[in-house]
Length: 393
Figure: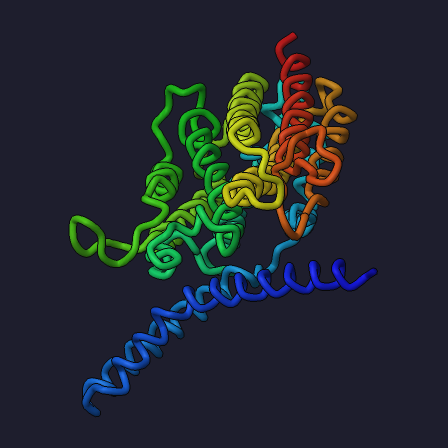
C-alpha cells in the first residue's frame, strides 16, 4: 500500500535533482565552452590568457578578502579616543586654555568663569583640542588606512559579471558601512567650517577645515582613471582630510585656531544631526515599503549597513561633542539626557545580524531588521531633539 507513496516521492526528488543539475549545467556551460576553446589555442596565447585569468582571480580574491575582514571594528571606540585626550582639559570647552580647568568652567561656556592666568614668560599657552575634529580624523583613518576603501576598488566597479554589487546579497555590506560613516564625516566637516571653527560666522574660514571639507567631498568611487582621464583615487584624497583635521587640532592646541563652543552652535549642530538621521530613517522606510522579500531582498543589507555606519559614526561624534561643549552641557543640566542618548545609541550598535532580512513587520518567519534599525535611529533622534529643546529655552 505504501509503494505508490514511495514512488511519488522518488519521482519528486528525481525531478528536483535533475532541476538542480540543469541549473548547475547552465552556470558552468560558459566556463566549459571557454575551457574547450582555450585547449585549442597556441602556447603563447595560452600563457597570456592564463596570466589574465590569474590576475582576475587575484583581483577578486583580494576584493572578497577585504570585504569580509573588518579591521579594528569596535563599537566602543569613543572610549579609546577619550582616553587619549589630555586629562587636564576635563571640563574645558574646545579651544579654551587648559589652565581654565582649575576654575571648573570654560571661558566661553556661557557660565561664570575665572580669567585665565597668562602663560609664564617663555612658556607657550596651551588650549584644548577639538575632540570632534580628532574623532573625525580617526574615523576617516579607520575607513581608508586601517581598512581598504571598497567603493573605489576596481573589482567593486566591475561588479559581479557586470551586475552592481549593490544588487547582490553579498560583498557590499562593508562598502555601505563605510559610506554611512563618510556621510557623517561630510556633515561634520561642513559644520566645522561653517559654524564651529569660526567666531559667530563672521571670522575668516579656517583653511585646514576648508581643506578637509573639500577633500571629503571628493567622489566616493574614484579610481586612478575616470571618465575624464587620470584622476586621484578616493583614499588618497581622504588621507589629505586626515592631515588637515589633525593640523587644525595642532593649531588649536597652540591657541592659534578657533573653536566657537557656544550654546547656539551646539543647537545648530544637533539640528543637522537630527535631520541627517531622519533622512536615513526615511530611506529605510522606503525600502521596507518597496519590498517584503525577507532574507531574499538584495538591497536590504546595504541599506541596513549604511544606517549602521551612520549610527556608528554619530555615536563617536556625539561623545566628542560632549567633551567639546562640556561647560554648556553642565550649565544647562543636560548630563542625564546626554547619558541616556549615548546609552541608547550604544545599545543599538549591538545589533549585528549575519544576514539582513526585510520581511513584513508582522511576519512570523521573516524579521524586519530595517524596521528595527529605523526605530533605533528615530529613538536616538528623539533624544537629540529633546536636548535641542532644552538648549532652545
